[in-house]
Amino acid sequence: MTATTAPGIRRADHVAISQFINHGDLVLDVGCGDGQLMELLQHDRGARTRGLEVEQTGVNRCVAKGLAVVQGNADDDLPVYPDDAFDVAILSKTIQELARPKFVLDELSRIARRVIVSFRNYGHWRVRTTLLTTGRIPNLGHDVGWWSDGARRPCTARDMAELAEQAGLAIAAATAVSGKPVNGRSLGRLNWTAEELVFVLERKVKR
Amino acid sequence: MNAPARTLSGADGLKRLSVATPDQPLRLDSGRTLENVEIAYETWGELNADKSNVVIVCHALTGDQFAASPNPVTGRPAWWDLVVGPGLPVDTDRFFVICSNVLGGCMGSTGPASRKPDGTYWGTDFPVITIADMVRAQIALLGRLGIENVFLAIGGSIGGMQVLEWTVQARDRVFAAIPIAVAARQSAQNIGFYETGRQAIMADPNWRNGNYLAEGVRPERGLAVARMAAHITYVSESALKRKFDRRLQDRTTKTFGFDADFQIESYLRHQGQTFVDRFDANSYLYITRAMDYFDIAAEHGGVLGNAFKGLHTRFCVFSFSTDWHYAPEENRQIVRALNAAGCETSYVNIETDKGHDAFFVEEPEFWAGLRGFIDAAAGARGLPKRSAT
Image (cartoon, rainbow over all chains, first blue to last red; front, side):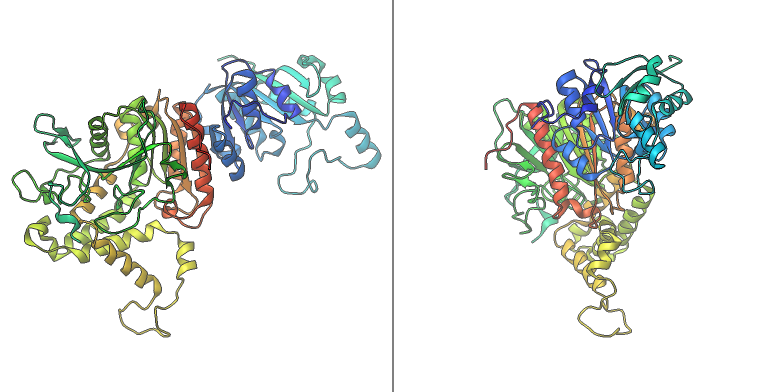
């Protein structure tokens, strides 16, 4: 199978991300796993892709598919990339698992003109009512518990917006994974209604 | 068995081609030229009609051109028959594979153990060569074979240095490259280890200032010690512990002498002794020196990325977690430079306790990675996918 074969199963957040990728974009997928998103972006959007993945099995699967992937760690390996090396950098359901999310976002906004993040929204109304009624943070991932290794950081749409602001980024577009894109001003409603979100972030100050 | 003393005549049955003549000498980095150079080589598989399926295999320090078939001179088995052969990652059913003995080597290519045109041995009159000189000779060999473009260049250790050098010297004539367990520059630690080996050779009274072939002796002890010291760096501490630890060799108590009490001593002595039967001591000096001088960045303004800038070659770098000869971090420096240069780059660090020499031995994750990258590159190059098995 080559990298341009149509992928079989498509993750909903991957499809949501792909609408923001233009033909010919050079894309860095941070935490690319076995390369499903890269395949989709090559096939559907005509993008050129590079991956960064920490797990051996994911790296081997990517290499076996002919995808360019570097075995490495987002928390450590991004500083070596030059400024503006990529058109787009993607963190698909990765940012809540990073040890240093602010550092990684700072680095990605340096090496790519746009950063796309997808994440689980802990501001969703069901999460809020569960917290209200049970007194516990609902587990939206597959964490054994909030204390487990690599447990997700439970942040909301507004929390993510705050991080973007801190990193000097503006929300150019936002969408629920199963919805239509809106601009950053509709954040309040998205924060109530979206279980999973995609933010397209751009530098406030253009270089 | 008399590996170092072969002549240029080819009476030993090794395949050779002349790649430099007085009319077209080989110009070396040192500023000297070689007017008569022969390169010994082997091939496997068939060259396709548009000559697009050529694979260059680059051998390591003590290797030779017999990557995929037994060496008829030494009787040793192929050194990479786990990787190169029918249906293997470097698939000789689909690719035309060429492996040549390096310039300065002692398995038929011109080196210090060869004779000069006047019939005397080169010895230490042979010019000091570099990795780039070795690759120059290989490119000339391909020219003699009527081949311009390379589908894949692959090799480990000093073979990986040659692969990197191929991509910068032959520019976009290399479609894909797999440097394995290597560095873009020789570390101080490695220069130190190889200098220790060279000093052992030169301290052997039989070295005779490099003239031992003419005098009918060989610095076997020095060469064996050089090999023993280097061999320790090719295996991991954890593997030495697993295989030998402090176990005694064929005895139950210490002898309170300097015999090989420990299994590790016996093992290293064996490594040294079998090595001198097949390798020329002066070749060892020249090839290790070429490794010391290797520093791609130094030749590109001190910035490694500049060496690779604008290359269309697709790279896949492999390292081994317990390799301390060319540690994963040194391989990662190459990967970072390739990324900085915008090259299409993959990097796989294989978890293993087999150390630097892991690329010679059974390592399924490594093979799977090789197979995947090579098959995908073959697809992109329009070469057939794996033959039906």
